[in-house]
Length: 136
Image (tube, rainbow, N blue to C red; front, side, top):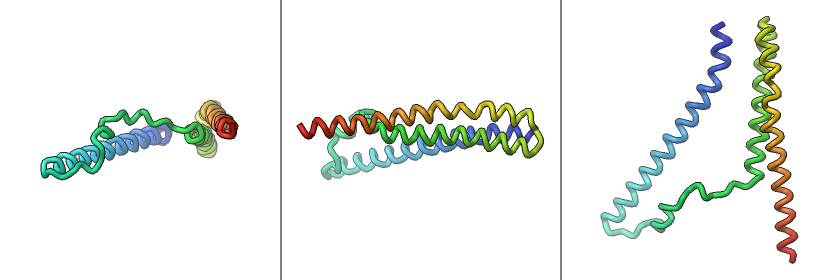
């Protein structure tokens, strides 16, 4: 029973910790950068970057469909593979009820996988369209 609970909760805990560490590191880096700029301005030094760039919205960066598609492909494959491996492990242990339940959840990873394929196709269609427009 404990093994089952741990095997289902540890991946979620791992993801939560990794996201928290990433956010914490980004926040520390931003604070260090802001302190550096303030110290440079206090000493009368020129600011290392344009101040207008500091206040731009970082969400304006547009990701290419290829990168989004690749991420979704691997997320979908990872979800399906994880549930499949967990079902094999529980079948090996002898917990067939849990194994069958996990195996029935395995297709959940197909949805992000297919959406990832769609994004990759969109990337190549847009690339072809841009090449045609550049040729004109």
